[in-house]
Each structure stands twice: as C-alpha cells, then as structure tokens.
Amino acid sequence: MKHSEYVACDALGLAELIAAKDITPAEALAAARARYQAVDPALNAVIRRMDAVADAAAEQDAPPSPDAPFSGVPFLIKDLFQDYAGEPSSYGNKALRDAKFTPARHAEVTRRFIASGVTIFGKTNTPEFGIKGVTEPEAFGATRNPWNREHTPGGSSGGSAAAVAAGIVPMAGANDGGGSIRIPAACCGLFGLKPGRARVPGGPERSDLMHGASVDHVLTRSVRDSAAMLDCIAGYEPGAIARLASPPTSYLEAIATPPGTLRIGVLADSPLDIPLHPEARAAVERTGQLLESLGHRVEYAAPAIDGLQLAQDFLSMWFVYAAHAIDTVRAETGAGVDAFELDTRAIAHVGRALGATEYLSAFNRWQDYRHALAVFHADYDFLLTPTLAGPPPRIGETATPAWQRRLLRPLLRVPASGRALIKSGIVEQLARENLKHVPFTQLANLTGTPAMSVPLHMTDAGLPLGSQLVGAPGSEADLLQLAAQLENAAPWFDRLPDL
Image 1 (tube, rainbow, N blue to C red):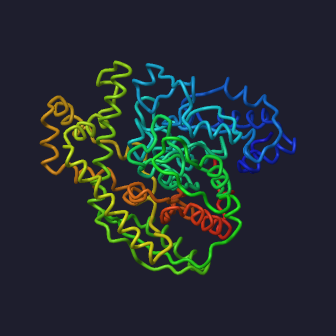
Image 2: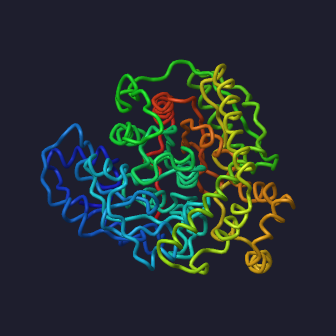
Image 3: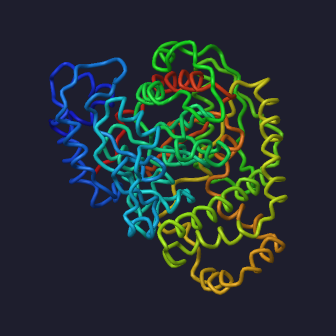
C-alpha cells in the first residue's frame, strides 16, 4: 500500500478497505511501519515497538463486526495509563524505564481499544508522569512537531499527536488531565475531544484519577474517527465513580445531524491576565467568524471564575499527584531521587508541603467552578477560547532556566523549605509561569465537562493553532455535531505537514 493511499484514509476509511478485502491488515500495518521508519527518527514520537503483539493481531482474519469498526487499523497507545499486559510501561520516567515495569493486566481503556479492532504496534512518548504541556522527557528525549521540528507538538500526548500528524497512524491513544489531548491537537493541526468525567473508564488501576480530572480518548485527523472510537470506549466499568446515561444515539450517528442554532460565549483574554499572542487571538476570532457564518450567535461572555485561583487550585492537585507518583515509583522500583527529573522533584516538594486542609480547600473550590460554569451554560451552549495562549513553543523554550535549577537542588534537600516556598507565594508564581502558554484548558478538567480543540487556524509561520470549545456536562454528542459542521465548512483533513 503506497503512503499516499494510506494517508488519504482516516481510520474508518482504512477499516472499510480492509473489510472489502482491498487491503489486508498486514498490508495496513506494513504501511504504518514504513511511515514510522521514514519519519520517526526525526520526530521521536514512538518510544516502544510492540511488533509481536502487532504481528499476531494483523494475522487474524476476523469477519467485519459492528462492535469492532476499526478492525485491522494500525494504532498506537500512549505510554501513560494505557497499560498493555506484558508490555513495559515507562510513563516518561527513567526509573520505570530501567526497571522494565510490566503491568500484569490491561488498562480498561486499552482493553476497549483492542475490542474496537485496532492493531496496536507501539507506544508514544510523553513527559514524565504527563505533568507538562510539552513532550521533552529526559528518559526518552524530546518529541518534535511534524510541522516544524524546532517546535513542540505539545503535551502530554505529544508523541501521539506527532505520530498522527506525521501520518504514521490515522489516530492514536491520548489522555487529558489538564489539556493533554487538546494542547497537542492545537499544536499539530488535529481534532482532539476530551470527554467528560467518567465517560471513559480509567480503571482498573486508576479509576477516577485526579478526582476525575483525567480522561482517556484519542487524537484524530477526522471528527468521525473520534466519534466512532468514543462509541467503542465509553461506558460504565465496575468501580467507577458514576454511571452516566448513554446518549440517545451513537456518537457516530449523531454527527450526521447538524446542530441547531447555538449561542456561544467567547473568552479571548488569558484568565491569568497575561497578554495573548496575536496569533492566538486571530485563531479564536477566525473560529468565531466561521461559527457566525454558520448561523450561530457568538458574543463575548465568560463564566464568573477567578482564573488565577483556578490555576493555583489545579496546580495544588498537580503537585500532590507528582509527589504521590514519585513515592509510588520509588516504593515499587527502589529508585533513588536521581531517577526523577528536577522539575518533577521540585513540584513534588511543594506538593508534600501542602497541608491536608489546604488541599481540601482547593478541592472544594472545584464545586464553585462547576457552579459558575453551569450558570454560564444556562445561557450559552458552549464557551469558545483559544486552546493555547500562542503558537507552539520551541523545543526547550519552556525548560527551567539553569540558574533556577542551581537554586532548586539545595532547596530540595531541606524538607522544611517546601513550606517556606508555599508561604513565599511560589504557587501563584508557578501558576503564572507554568500555565502561561496553556491557561485555558484546565477549566474543563476541574469541572469534569467535555471540551474539544478544533484545527481551524494556521499561523503566518505555518504552525497550527487550534481553538477550544467547552460544553456542559454530557454534551459530548453536541460538541461532536458542531465539530463535524466546522470540519465540513472548513476542511482540515488533507492539510498535512511536508515531511
């Protein structure tokens, strides 16, 4: 199968060719591997091959099934929480990489990926424990953006985004605890839907991870692939925090119906009061104009939320999560502190110093954000924002400066310094600094609402820059309907980087 034929198909299109016997699963896999060999040395998107698993799957000649709409389609899973039984998981961490940590059972979302029919042949790169919006782990090296290799593909699902944008696979596994589906989608010109809390299973090991802020799904080039995969992986699992009502029709069927006239509020200023890059403003304005041309009502309006406080509360959870991740990995592997990146150790240091009542106060404010967003959604169907505050940063641009790293090392050896750092206002400083490039995405995670990034803008420098739409609880089908309408009005599928 020629590469031009391979990339001309989305995942459902490839599955249709396989079902019609025009190509075999082995031929589709060979095309994916050939593309991987051609482009991944320059991108570093795939950090682990799973050849034996893939060959065994491709050799199966099962008849087409409506329960497995992606039979034979090459696929990559993210090396974070999408565990595959018997295959090492590293989570972007040197200790797990070196210890060859091998899960004994599939993550439930991986089991559902497999049931959808895909042929999994590798794992994609991620920052250490998924804690950054760029994919530059010390354990595996930086992943680069196919549109410009000097820039990041975003994070934490940056490896998956780069692989899809580069045409290695038509879709890949991703997850999102603070923007990690939407940020890479915006950086790489892809469609990325973050489902709402409990829509997709997170177990059996990590059900309701980070209080439900983290959710799994995929990154895709087409809206219909995202909808069809959500049909395959959504639904209750034993032990989940909630059993959500299923939509009246499948997500794939839903996108065939255009949305009615929608009322959309626009937030075009950073919630951290940091000036936006002109390209980010241009991206959201272009999206707003397209929405208006489709008959929707678009006006400036936003939920009444203190954006800086939300950022601080998000980071409080993130810091404690980092501390727990380090402690868990050290207990399981016996690794020393040098097996963890300095930035990870620094935020974990602050996380350990947070008092239980401080953490609970931050978590309790999540309800305030949910209420404010619900008041907003009583008047507006969706909230439109930039996905990023500017174009994708250059590789290394967001790294901690050398002088700060020199100061951090001795501080981390003094346990009491964590408490002193909190009193100094470091959390607010870190909120502004760490989230200045991505200040818009955490709202949907803390409120548990679905949100998506749509790839409607290209910068003057030739880099993609997506726009975000945030829906009310349970509005995944509504978001997908609107995404399909936008995709039809301003097609992006055939817009590919020149590699």
